[in-house]
Image 1 (cartoon, rainbow, N blue to C red):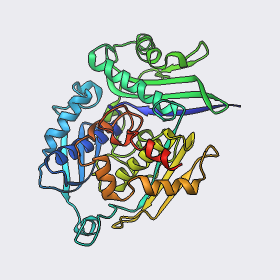
Image 2 (tube, rainbow, N blue to C red; image 1 turned 90 degrees about the vertical axis):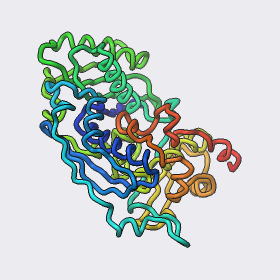
Image 3 (cartoon, one colour; image 1 turned 180 degrees about the vertical axis):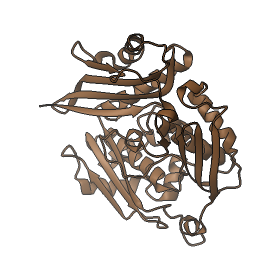
Length: 381
């Protein structure tokens, strides 16, 4: 049986991703100074303006003006023709102290373990269709955006701006990915760059090198399918932190609990427990428990123990699901303090998670991607 599965991604210059990166840049700056910082910061951007808002408790100090402008420069917003300029944009801050009501429920006290920073459900997912144990469509979509940004910053994609999007449709046969059916890239560019020249550059330098053998003579390619993409960035669209959560996780291949990641310190289980759920799912698949697995954890504010643990193996499990839950409880960190300690989450590693996905990345700082529990899981099977 054949089927088509599609996933999309955006580049770091997309307005929503600009906001994600600024939020995580603020988080990293504060954690670098004070690892116990509590941070919940969101951003909004439109028409040459950045607004940062949220709640913080820290002994450090974040220079919001500097962080915003440095982040915009790093992304590549150095030319006002691309919708915002790091030197001349307006930067507003509405960041205040964290509510003591929240802090009281979360902080570890004598006789009381650190509680979850919020209520909610978190999902982790893994499958064995790629070496990264990720769904192929979202992995390829991210890689297109990574390649595009790399060439743009080297000056090898002339006249291209930071704003970009990708989409990849993969054809599956009997549950296995076989080929790329359709590849889509929308790439911001200067008006003087012709559509034909841009299309040729993007196909030859980005799409073909990334998709490689997954392409064939029947693969459909769209580059700027509407024609021009000159007005982009915050001039073309408003951006908000946390609006690209499906891109951040599994591209629709696995569920998402609904909570965004960026701008949140690891006491917020929206972030830390989602990382833990991915860590659990990835190690279980690597240990041969199932070819595909989805782990759900649920929490409530101020309580350390998860309210529930649920496992779905989609009929591909080699072990009963209730037995897998027992293994999770025995092997993996599932309480907030244990998750933070096991995955070493009080480090300034979040800025680089804010674009191109939080999962499936080969980076030593992405501790939730480690396969260090495989042998322990196998010993219990």
